[in-house]
Image 1 (cartoon, rainbow, N blue to C red):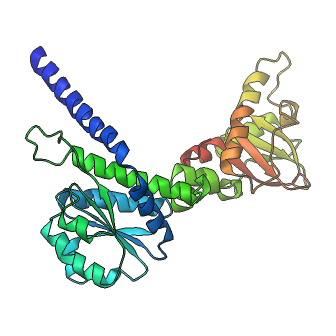
Image 2 (image 1 turned 60 degrees about the vertical axis):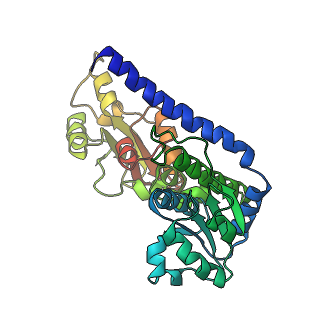
Length: 327
């Protein structure tokens, strides 16, 4: 690619963004009382919010439905053709419908509108023209008109689909605020996501309770090192006969011990261990909070104790990382 071709390509990309950004900014003035009515209608709907559309509008509609569903508004997408062949039965009297068509005249969509209105189901129409058939059927009209598509031929929906998607996002966010939708609510709909893990996964869900690397207080260092290697946690728990934690020996402790002039592999491991290790007595603590403790104290393993100091398990940094836990 020549320098001129490179510059031309870069400018083409920038022009698309400028054109679509202008369409969004022009639409800010269209967020008015009609938009507020649409938000109230959806918020007051006892059933579901069904989104429908054809072609590119249908693809955008599917995304809008997914966004609504994940932010507290029960919603799903129906294709108009499928609706004509039985899926209309999925729309109930307590539902509302958002229908999308830039022209407002999409044949497949127009065919289902009389059936929706026959059951007196509230209809929010999203179209580029207020005098379109879709707009006339709608109880509420949300304009998605743009002056110019980013496509140089003016044929492929570009600016208009971007605007439609943005209006859908505006509806979803306005509904979130109206319902006082919190991070905890969002996480409950995304238990597998990073936010869900941060808000719901607890220490007890991740801590190790079996095959822990444990030695007695009188265990020689050379034996403790073997147990540490086999345990693959970089640490050894030194516990008394009553299962109480006395100290923790880390691989860092062993390295530091090697520098001592009186070092001996035959000495008891507890002589080189940390007698006051960081620990946690609340296994119900969020794993994300435990991660903060581990990072704050620069340790790899956090012993989990009961109220009497007995070891219930350990939480290792690697387990948190593998589980996708973040601060």
